[in-house]
Length: 255
Length: 220
Image (cartoon, rainbow over the protein chains, first blue to last red):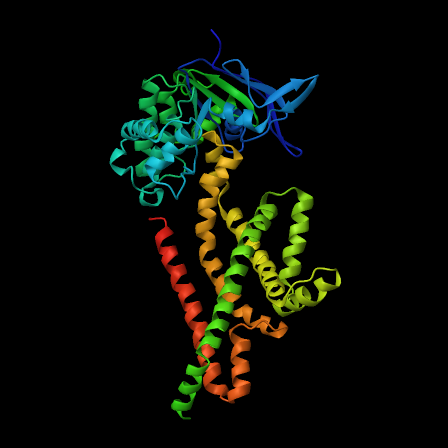
């Protein structure tokens, strides 16, 4: 069976600073992988390389055996064309820490924009799909509200609906609860848990340890640009093999 | 001062004054429309252009914005003819104002586009929009809303700047008024009347701007 995601020896530099120093990661279809680690460890950067929001200088990323972002022509590695990269970005969906909803569009129009302009669906088809997903995240009643009229948790749920409606193979979540007030965190985590139950493949960068423990079938602990440790959360969180992870877990709160 | 003689004179010159007013309005309109179209190109070049183009446009906007409009008007009328471009006063004046307007609109648009958080572009990218589509459906609608109030202000500035065309002999409202005064010697009431007309035009522009702003405000 081909892997859904295959990252090999991923290297990423900002100028002289190397933030990813050779990361490998595999995911099969239906996997829910949580990436944990202190800030600056490279977890968000890794996520953003997968959909080419960041360039990377070494290594390969494959989704369903298709190489992402770069191609090798005559021994020279070069960036793929922008149009090709735009198409490859549809293999994944992403939810951001800051939601990034389009403020001038209603919740419904936020979701339908990509369906109409990228997937070329008719307005009616797009609306049907968008309404289905807004209902799934519990916001159908607010579909005509603008982002500014929604709470942070509601905005994030719309943002997740916007990403999932495009029917990606893999969902990327980048610290989606970090900008939320504590009482709004759970409604967003619940949506992600529901998606996990449906068998959605997800790669989740998070600081919510209890959530990672409950939802992930594998956890990756990143440390200084490398994978420090990975495995089943039930083992990792109880008996960490490395001192770094033990230390990290001690400073994290399980709530 | 007697009001009667003034009203009498005003009635006599009503068509001449109207013609001057119309010329002021048409100069302003042409300058605003042409200047804004040009300004959008300037703004796009300033924001997304390749580095040499960006430098060129930066030089253009800084130079134009640092030059008094009167100098632009005079240059456009007297200097262009020396390089063989014969423009009549009306054309030269509109050109100068449009160029002036474009540098302001360009700078406004650049500011508005750069003020949009980077996350907006990223969110557009991850749903598969190309740069072109992201600009049309995500960035431009936000930038335009942002620019609108300042743009209305610029439009009103253009109306005021159109008075400078009287220097090169364009018979707009101010020059027409001056001609009437030199014949009637009623400087106070006619200047006052012209001032009132300018006010009405600019007040109208401002009200229109407020209306459009209200219509396009994003609910929150």
